Amino acid sequence: MPADAPPSATRHRPAVAAPRIRQVVLKVHSRCNLACDYCYVYQHADQDWRARPRVMGPGTVRRVADRLAAHVARHGTDRLRVVLHGGEPLLAGLTVLDRTVRTLRAAMPSGVMVDVAMQTNGLLLDEAALDLCHTHGIDVGVSVDGDRAANDRHRRHADGRGSFDEVAAALRLLSRPEHQARYAGLLCTVDLANDPIAVYEGLREFDPPRLDLLLPHGNWTAPPPGRHPDDPATPYADWLIAVFDRWYAETPRRTGIRLFESVIALLLGGRSGTQALGAAEPDVMTIETDGTIEGTDTLKTTTASAMRTGFDVFRHSIDEALRHPSLAGRPTGTAALAPACRACPVVDVCGGGLYAHRFRDGAGFVHPSVYCRDLLRLIGHVRTVVTADLAALRRRVTAASVPTPAAQP
Amino acid sequence: MADHDQPPIPRTVGTALVQLGDVPLADLLAGAGDGVLAHVLGSLVAEGEPGRPGDVSAFESSF
Image (cartoon, rainbow over all chains, first blue to last red; front, side):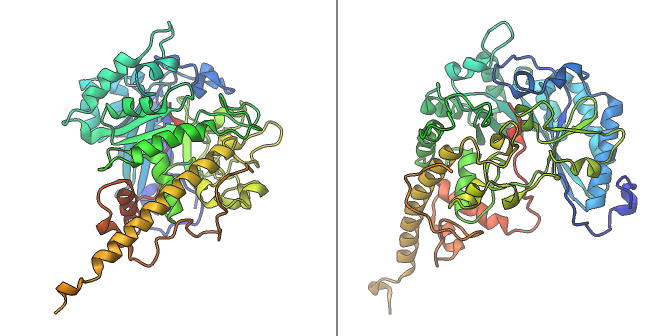
């Protein structure tokens, strides 16, 4: 069966045991209205964005939709997530976003659900944008790094002005009761220069349903700020543990923190909700404004070519692109891990960490994460806390289930 | 691999590092209150429900 067989011809065939994508990062606009100095899109190795169209055109969107429809039909997939991304996706304009979502959904075989999310810096997030999000059920994630001082350390305009006032106004709008259904959460990049509790409290002011705390991208060749590969210090674990302890102690739970909840779930034998942990399968694909198909976006931080597949939606199917080493063609699971990782007691939780963080120039990705020491310390701390909490819970539940003598006949 | 100051963790590949024990998960969940642990226990229960999407966040790709 050709990879691009019409959806109607293949929809009810059994799923084939082959790699498939579940999420697509769709670059609807290739430029940004901020100039954050840590951004992997513009500040790291891959500078291909300079040659790409600013906006994904309607012909490209139609081709993306057709390719995705063929892919989900071939694999019997009933659900696909598309993340409208950039650059800054709202720069594309609401007309383009509306047309894009309609085109994607219209192309899908009957019964296939397309969940749409958007990751924005919030600067253009107004009532009109939120109306569109309600119309299409687009979940909105906003990037903000904490309180004013923390946010404006990196998230600045090209002229140096901070962006906090603008993003704060957008978040006050998004957190209104009438918009909360579309509020996916906040995305915060950790900076050791920021006070962890001030960052956490600052983010919580916006009443997010979920927080994503991202470690700054880096690897063994280009280490993250403050993370010296041979130094036994664990500055990122120390920072994260400060937040974890504050967050975990709050009852009732005020918000979710995906990284921490994934560590706890994995410790208890469950699943990760983040690609940073748990040996996640590479099921995320990036499609640029010109229709180029690329691998996991974070590989932009390794080499200029790490995520280039040489494929595009005009000439190639999604399944063809998936065979590339930056996508499902790369080793996964324990086979992808360094010997030290395979022998590590917490490998089932850490999973080797985010794939991009394992990179060493000239030697590839078969290394522990550049954050290995931090991950080990964080996981150990969470394990200690959860073990004690769970033991206390078991005692309470067991005691409550034992009848008291007075209650017996 | 990094040095660590945690006590050695007995590891069997594919098993949980923190055991729920012999109290049924549903009983633990019922007694867990409304804190973080309760929420995660609830997610473990939900993992077994059919139709639940098992994908992970794409937001690592996002600033």
